[in-house]
Image 1: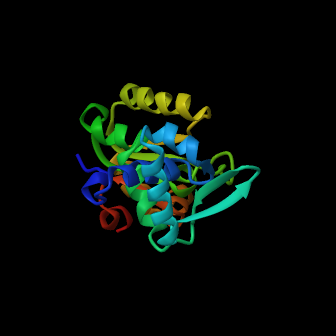
Image 2: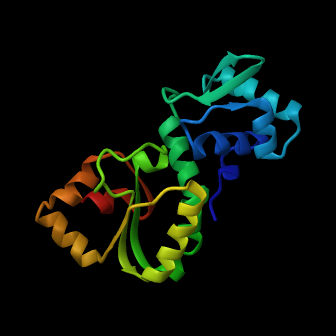
Amino acid sequence: MADLRDFIVSKVRVKVIKTFLENPPEMYHVRDLVRRTSEEINAVRRELARMEEAGMLKKEARGNRLYYWFREDYAFFPELLNLVAKTTGLGQNIRKNKEKIGKINFVVFSGEFIKHLPRKNSDQVDILVVGEVVLPELATIVRHEETIRGQEINYTPMTRDEFDFRKKRRDPFILGILASSRTLIVGSEQEFVS
């Protein structure tokens, strides 16, 4: 299965990037990153310095601590965010259990969902799953992530025929997904939008 380590050689950097991008709005201090990554403090400091020099991170002193956060204006932020969404947490669980979930054509996460931002409105969907879905399996995986996040996840399963029909009819729900920020966890972007 694909992993960030396929692209990034430093295991410490992989863990630090995962920590930052699993919850992009969050700020972390060095000791917190050491706890979350289970790596040596000097290795974490070295990677933070390299990442800051590369323009990936910002830092700010608060009291006697330095806090770091990932820069959304970093040139490869969207690509790294997509990689982390696919290789960690719910994205990883869905990809790993794809066969149990059914014959899946597409799994799409909204941009707000992967960035841990609040929904713009209450009926906005966090996850769209298209294909022949085994609902109890999908529900179990989603409930596990809801427990971790401490919030409800709004997901919508639909068959491929329904998706294609609604797309041809220019259904507002489908057009909203197509027009918004999203990450395809399973499936081809070209096939999804065509």
